[in-house]
Length: 258
Ligand SMILES: NC(=O)c1ccc[n+]([C@@H]2O[C@H](COP(=O)([O-])OP(=O)(O)OC[C@H]3O[C@@H](n4cnc5c(N)ncnc54)[C@H](O)[C@@H]3O)[C@@H](O)[C@H]2O)c1
Image (tube, rainbow, N blue to C red; front, side):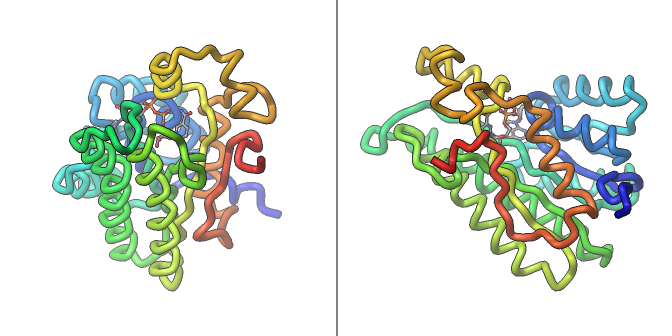
């Protein structure tokens, strides 16, 4: 066994939504494993803060502001990555928003459109431009799309998010079939209840505490840490996962086994 296969030395990675939460933890872990990381977020101050923490730990990172729902910005993100680091080997498409909760018959279609544009179209746009760059390089690559347990389970009042996250699995499987002949692997990670600003905001919306919520969402009875999801993405990015494509890996403390 070559232990270096799990390392990411000499790989160039993009992480979207890397200004906070799981994206930040993922960018930090990829950099700690040796990748040169483009920390991308719609929030430039948040992206810069992540870059600072990576550099303080001796890692290599640059911030690039991009709204994943905007094709020109996503295209520019990939182009800037190549300008900065010469290539693109792996990408973690993590940026998403969580919507206001409303049942379908009362849905606000402006909210629906916003969620679909970031959480589904955003993943599609990132895949489109990342894979085009990997194809141009001709040396394979790895794309990791961040779904959710909502990729495989319904959630009352959350139709746009659930539809978008189910769609992320469809995009992942389609991309894996289209690009396997070029050794570009496309996988998804499905986080459960992970302690991030997104989860805390959702809990505030429905006014529940961690003590009430965690046992319902986790067989371990606790929220996950962003770093525990980052481990799955880092492995899928690495050569250690060389025979894995089209897979959706739940990191959910067994929530979806019930
Ligand atoms: N936290 C959870 O419990 C949980 C559970 C399942 C899935 N997820 C998924 O994990 C991923 C990360 O979630 P999180 O909890 O870390 O979220 P978060 O809200 O804590 O962080 C999301 C980041 O994405 C950025 N972002 C938002 N819209 C963007 C856009 N249009 N373009 C670029 N960046 C944008 C934000 O600025 C922020 O930095 C998301 O895909 C989310 O759906 C989270």
